Amino acid sequence: MTETMIAIILGIVEGMTEFLPVSSTGHMILVGNMLHFEGEFASVFEVFIQLGAILSILFLYRDKFMRMIKPGRLNIHRSGLTLSHVAAGIVPVMIIGYLLHKPIKEYLFSPATVIIGLIAGSVLMLVAEKVAKRPVARSVENITVRQAFWVGLFQVLALWPGFSRSGSTLSGGLFFGLSRTAAADFSFIIAVPLMMVACFYDLLKVISHLSVDNLHMLAIGFVISFVVAYGSVVWFLKFLNKSTLASFAYYRLVLAAVSYYYFFMN
Image 1 (cartoon, rainbow, N blue to C red):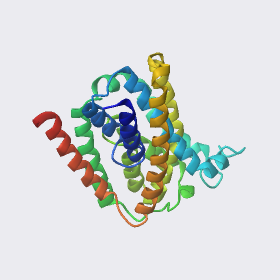
Image 2 (image 1 turned 90 degrees about the horizontal axis):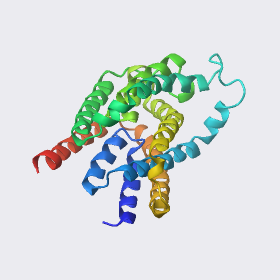
Image 3 (image 1 turned 90 degrees about the vertical axis):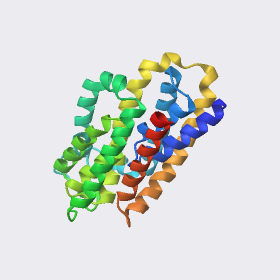
């Protein structure tokens, strides 16, 4: 398979899965293994196309980001979403992710661990839908800092590949009184600073493996990831207005079963 085709396939996979509760990391590991696209350059490529997906969120939520960075928005007593909410949502996973970054990369990035994460994340989402109470925060602007912190703690689960960052935060949101759309909006917004820090941290360690010969592949993957992620998020927000997370949980269970057969029974 040509490099261009690999870039197109992985750009589509990243864009479709990064912000849906299906685990983009898990999909990238599984598809990368299937395409035999592994190694140092593969790590660089995956970081670059993640940045494409992040850019789509910055574009979609540009008005909210502009309001948050205005003077005084750090004040937790101000109404609406503030930088304090974002900080509460990302600090727990940033601290734990930094402390456990090496063992996570060394021991958890494999098809077997992804399959475990897919199953565990599915169970979490189904339980969250089952026990979710009437939401007290129907809009992302109504979220309290306390709720943001608890959602951030659930996000720590996503450090295990296959669990899904959005799946974990959406489940946490349902447990602590957020509507599905409010939880989704908050999940997407806190993904931007979190993913940017994680991407640049990873990029600094593998950038030496980048060469001019690979730039076309990076450009293709970046653009496709941006476009597909944009469409994926717009569709998902409309989907959540009338549906639950159950269908994604069932998809993850099917994917886990298929992956287990492909990697361990075939």
